[in-house]
Length: 192
Image 1 (tube, helix red, strand yellow):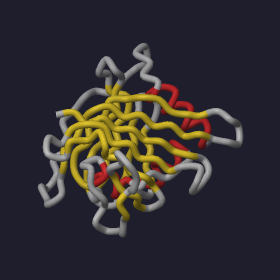
Image 2 (cartoon, helix red, strand yellow):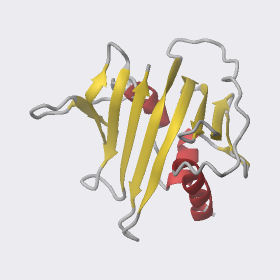
Image 3 (tube, one colour):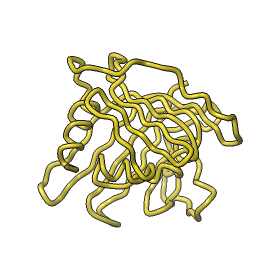
């Protein structure tokens, strides 16, 4: 089941096949505005290197993220703008809708674990995509020449190509083979 779901979403959404059906675009859900709400959009690339079969999975999509870890919406689209998947969460419910399915999940980590075979720390991702550590957990600055960023939750967050003032640029989050298997690389280009 996991492989079929992964193949359906990654194969369809992340590889950006424009010939597939798409969802109807709709505005972000009406959320009660709270401290920490964000709106980010841009391009997202995820690669999971599975050493068991030697083949990486992943691809590229456009993304539009609204809200906060407690309530929000994430839409994924093809390079041409066709909406391929919409995840919504709030009030204890997490839903993923694609042209082929509409499913509920226990939480956002369960959704990413089911789709990618790895849990992506979505609560921390809201801060990481703004070039800063998640305040709920400890972090340490990356060390080295020409290195900017931090380590947190077993991930290395490279912010050397991100402009925190303009809130745009490239964020690269990696959980490497030095910590766990498989390695995961998430690249997010935040656009104004």
